[in-house]
Image (tube, rainbow, N blue to C red; front, side, top):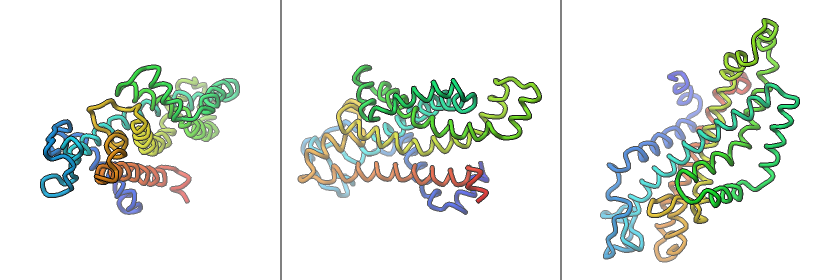
Length: 279
């Protein structure tokens, strides 16, 4: 871990910047109750539409709620949804991709046709359909995002598994009489793990962006809990001309989060992928 951190700082400075942004967002999410100037639902009608200044650094909305506090609490929602949905997506993708890439033939044909059938539907539409069937709620949103994103991610893990399957040490294990279970647990999964880490780091930014899009359309985290996409849709879009800061600051937070995860994922890919590291 220390070597990876040193390589990240020394060889991939942009990736280190992304890691710093990710750590900062995690800090905001964990310590939102301490860092936020006020509660996200605290209203002050007399201070409605106050411009950014010393009292309210990011200004206030139409109810006098502090925008900075809502952005900070929105980081908690985005990070929680992003991490939970990514864990579900990567777990399901591994359950599909590893057996498909290792066994091949009939197993691969069956699983990949299921993946093809799912990917034939637009991803955002599939997520909205799942949320509509399950009902609104944070848990249902996480489940919908995790299921929907697991199928395209499984293709990457399948490809990595196929490369590992053709290695000489896998053939040697088979010749020695090792079972499929032992080969998968002792040889395939540990070698596929770097690909899983890369997939997860790249998927986090996608999940946060998709969650914002779903919240913008009104199918995300129900009010009064703030989310960056919901802030852009509810107050930001309605009062964009009168109070542009209601759109600017949630949009900046969303952009920084996605940028941080994307550049961190690219740096981890360059450092953990054996082919890129050798090159």
